[in-house]
Each structure stands twice: as C-alpha cells, then as structure tokens.
Length: 253
Ligand code: ADP
Ligand code: MG
Image: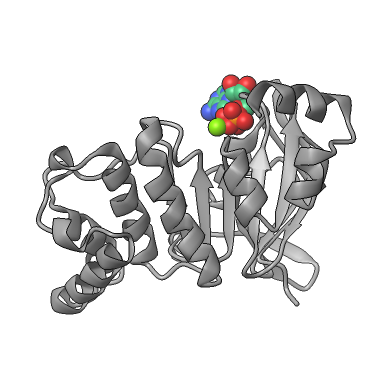
C-alpha cells in the first residue's frame, strides 16, 4: 500500500538554522497521525513542507506516492512549476491555529469560495456541498452567519468545512484547538473524531493528549528537529522510553 505521506531524511534550514534535521516517518492511508513536541521543535515547519509551503533542503518527501516539489523522469528530478504545485496543493486540506476565515463572507460563502474560485465549480453545486459540510460540522443553522457572529470554536469548524470542500485526500491540522477557550475545544475535537471515523487521513499537531490517545493510530514526539520517539499513542504516552519524551509529557499531561 502506498503511504499517504512518506519522509526520508527530510532536512529544512532557514539560513544557518537547521530546523528539521532528518525526519523519517510514514503515514498510512486512513490513519490519524499525531505529532507532539515542544514549541520550536519543527512541527509546523514539517506540515508546511508536506503542503508545498516550504522547500526541503535534503531528503525526500512523498505525498500519496508522488514526490513533493519535483517530477521524476528516469533518474532525473525536475522542479515543479508554480501551476503544478498549485494543483497538488488542492488535494491537501490545512487547518491552522488561527482560522483565517474571510470576514466579509458568510460561513457558507467561506466554504464555497475555493471550489468556485479555484476549481471553477458552479455556484449552486458548491453551495449545496458547503451546506452539507456545515451540517456535518454541526453548523447547519449558521450558514448565513458572518465569522464575527460565530464563536472561535464555530469559526474553526467552518475552517474545517472549508478545507473539506476541496475534497482533499489528506488533512493537516496545526494545533487547531490551541487558540480556543477550553469549553469550545470539545466540539472541534468531535468533528475531527468524526472525520477520522469516516476514514480521512489526518496529520494532527496537537497538545490534546486525550485526543491523541483515543483517536490517534500513531504518535510521534519531535524535539529539536528530529523524531525522538514514535509508536502507538497509548504506549508512548503511558510508557515513554526517552528522557526528553518523559520531560515533555510531565509538563503537558
Ligand atoms: P513548532 O511548530 O514545533 O513550534 P516551528 O516549525 O514553527 O516549530 O519552528 C521551528 C523553528 O524554526 C523555530 O526555531 C522557528 O523560530 C524557526 N522558523 C520557523 N519558520 C521560520 C522562518 N520562516 N524563518 C526563520 N526561522 C523559522
Ligand atoms: Mg507550530
């Protein structure tokens, strides 16, 4: 089976600062893959590499069997053109800590935007799917609301629906609940749990260890740009093998 994400010795530097120092990992289709680690360990950078927002300096990275950033012909690699990168990025949904909805558009307009603008989909078709997606994230009755009329948790659920509207094969979540008031976190995690049950492949950077334990199929602990430890979330969280993992978990659990 082709991995949905495969990283081999992925390195990423900004100037002289090496942020990713050789990441190796594999995410299987339909898997919920959780990424934890202290601030500055390179988690967001790694997600950005998967999503073509950063170019890696060394190693190889594949999404669904295709090299990120390059086309392979024989044993030669050709850099993808911007238009080719844009096409690949359509297949990957990303949800950030900050929801970044368009403030002048209603919830349903936010969700319709990319299919209409990027894929050239008919508005009626896009609207119908958007309404279904808002229903799926528990906001069927908020379609006409503007972001300012929604709570942070509701806005984040609209952001998830917006990512899903492009029918991605992979969803990346970068601390999707970190900016939310505690009482709003549960609804967002419930939506993510539902996505997992529906078989969506998800890479989730999170500090929600309960979610990682219950929903995650795999968990990686990153520190200082390397994978320190990985495995079944329950095993890693209850019986960490490395001192750095133990120290981190003692602070967050
Ligand atoms: P995490 O998401 O685990 O908190 P990041 O991937 O955001 O970590 O950052 C890892 C390191 O890379 C940090 O030291 C950060 O300052 C640095 N970094 C991230 N993005 C850039 C950038 N665009 N330019 C320079 N340094 C960056
Ligand atoms: Mg981050």
